[in-house]
Amino acid sequence: MNKAKHKGILLVISGFSGAGKGTLVKKLISEYDNYALSISMTTRNPRVGEEHGREYFFATKEEFEHKITEDGFIEHACYCGNYYGTPKDYVESMLAAGKDVILEIEIQGAMKVKEQYPQALLLFVVPPSAEELKRRLIGRGTETEEVIDARLKRAYEESQGIEQYDYLVINDDLDRCVNELHNIVLSEHNRPDRNEAFIEKIREELKSFSFEK
Ligand code: ADP
Ligand code: 5GP
Image (cartoon, rainbow, N blue to C red; front, top):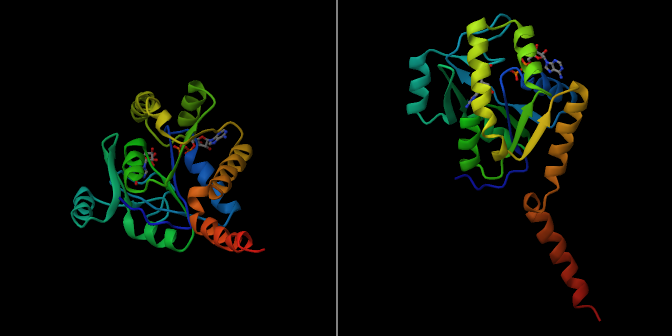
């Protein structure tokens, strides 16, 4: 378990495929400079327009399994027949630099992160309705009908785990949702357990008043 107190928050964003996580995260990062996005490794094929090192590090099964043996991932999981994993080095260095590091990962991975980083903040993004989810998945136009069906089935399974997250974020209007997400992170920074050094310092300073005549 990693108990190190970082200035930056490890932010885990999960949600059904098609809920709008990627869109939200892209906008969040373009509007605020406190975030760093972790780029995962995957064995799935690149979608049209995706670039190696930008959306994902695309790898073969053998390359992925080799990185597992090197202990190179914070977590990895199998999702709809492909491997996905979070490389360790980038996350550790960005947290140490005080960035709020975003992991856009599915639920099994999120639970593994929570075990290793108990201070991680877990957010679950949902669309306003199941019908809207289907519309968005079809509208994105990046998956075959078969893959869309598999992802919708998977969404039902994933919905069973929502209560394990810290916040539910409803992605209805994109701008409103980005704003809400950012405000959650700002509020989290003010929790006492993320500010132990400051609390100790002001307590020490106040002590001197107690001994004044
Ligand atoms: P995910 O990363 O969760 O799989 P995407 O970010 O790829 O989802 O979004 C899925 C589709 O829904 C995309 O076509 C995107 O443009 C659209 N979308 C995302 N957010 C919204 C929103 N708030 N309102 C309407 N459409 C949205
Ligand atoms: P997609 O194929 O749509 O890009 O991603 C499929 C699912 O895998 C999404 O729920 C996404 O959040 C998740 N995912 C992406 N990267 C990782 C990762 O590194 N680890 C885990 N556990 N899930 C990931």
